[in-house]
Amino acid sequence: MNVKKLLIEPLRKTNPVTVLVLGICSCLAVTAQLKPALVMGASVTVVTAFSNLIISLLRKGIPSRIRIIVQLVVVATLVILIDQFLKAFAYDVSKQLSVYVGLIITNCIIMGRLEAFALSHGPIESFLDGVGNGLGYSLILVIVAFFRELLGSGTLLGYQVIPPSFYEAGYQNNGLMILPPMALIVIGVVLWINNSKTESK
Amino acid sequence: MNGKPKWLVDWFEKHEPKGRWAWLGSTYEAFHTFAFTPNRVTTSGSHVRDAIDLKRAMITVVIALIPAMLFGMWNIGYQHYLASPEPLPSSLPILTCFWFGFLRMLPILAVSYLVGLTIEFAFAQIRHHQVNEGFLVTGFLIPMIVPVTTPLWQLALATAFAVVIGKEVFGGTGMNFLNPALVARAFLFFSYPTRMSGDNVWIAADLWGTDAIAGATPLAELAAGLRPSASALDMFIGTIPGSTCETSVIAILLGALLLLLTGIASWRIMLSVILGGGLMGLVFNQVPFYYHYLMGGFMFGAVFMATDPVTAAQTNAGKWIYGFLIGAFAVMLRVMNPAYPEGMMLSILLMNCFAPLIDHCVIARNIKKRQRRALLSSKATSR
Image (cartoon, rainbow over all chains, first blue to last red; front, side):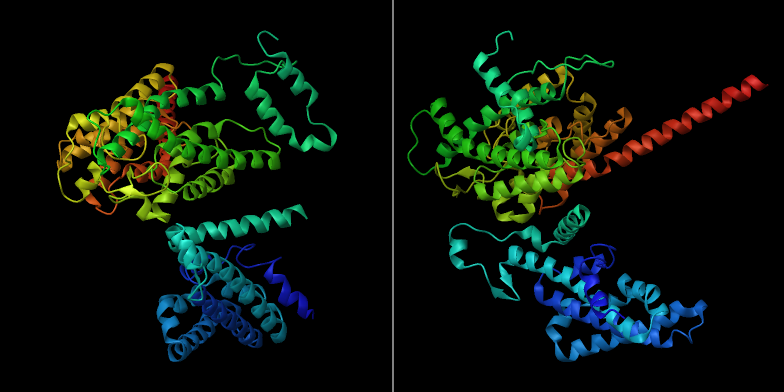
């Protein structure tokens, strides 16, 4: 078992967002600011890791005909747990994320990893694979949110980063960065850079 | 070498990039062909000889834009002196107004070309393409459709965005599906709304800087539910506040005439945009329908933007549908959405997206029609 490979490869080489282009919808929805993006990334990482673990443990007992339903039940349970947890301990962020926490159930990355990895690998490997893919997703989310919040609001994690003297000199925040289309364009640019780097190798 | 300065020819021959500098090939090529037509000819194969090529088409559009540009410069100065609190001179000399506007436009034009061409050259170099003339028109159009008080750094950003995201990611000139100049304007419009709409951006307060004198465009008055205060004649001539070079219908029509005479722009698109806009204007009947032609950028969009041969529909039937919907949507947005006083930009961008679909439907219908005809005739002969 190659721990490093399982954890590191999904960050760049097999990144679920930039290489497999999965989970784009939530990337668009929660990346206007850095904080919700971080929380969303953490939530998805937890859900992918534990659903991978549980399904991997159950994989020999699940009849292959109804495996999707079983997977859904596991994922949905985990998502509800996360949702309740956020409501209890991070109410503001949970408000900001609104339905998107619940929509983790439909995140293609999770089902993709369950089908492609957890059903055919042991529990520890599956867990690590889930963590790796969750982190790969979070990485892109954080990159996109970083640029969107910095250029769109002039803040990072809610703190003013661009000094007021800039604004006095005529600098303005870029309103387009806050709007959903720009999330798509920023992800596109990240994809572009990633592709051009991997192609040249 | 008839009439070509010898020193220039020699210079180009001596400096052809080789070896270590070979990667600069396309930059060299661009300047070489810009300076004069090189003597190199192809030696084999059959070729089409035609008077019109990309360079000539582009430069014709630029020439067609010049009346609107000149008028725009004058109008910047005229609006400034008209609105400035200092006592007016008894008569406003044309040259004073023009000089003011000229000085205002010069940096805007320079920034647009500098940023756009730098990116264009860089991309051509990286991709080992030839630099082509696509940006010649785009770089001229962008300064014409922004408010005069747009800060230069925002303009630079918008130009860069338009060239990279609007054009180069799709493969450069001829591959883009959105009009790059309008992408630049849309970028400004959504990024810096306070700089692109409202009453405080249209009239320059001073020669340098980005301050403005409050003054509403006819479209803003319309969006506020008022009847435009300018007379139809004023709006026709163009002595109203607005984006730098879009106000004068006369100057734009001069350009349109050239484009139509040379056959560079499609008359079908121009006519159908006007028909669509007029019809929608009649349906809403908020102001006399022809007001919509005179206000804002309707005419500019119809003549110079909608007719962009790359982003418009290609089939003749498609051009009618495409143009008609542009006009109709533009007026609909103007009348029904008070948040967007000007609908022309958004409606052209929208129809740019749909142009391939329209073409596809037109072609599919044509194929079906011909198949049916072929089927009928084959039945008739077999009988």
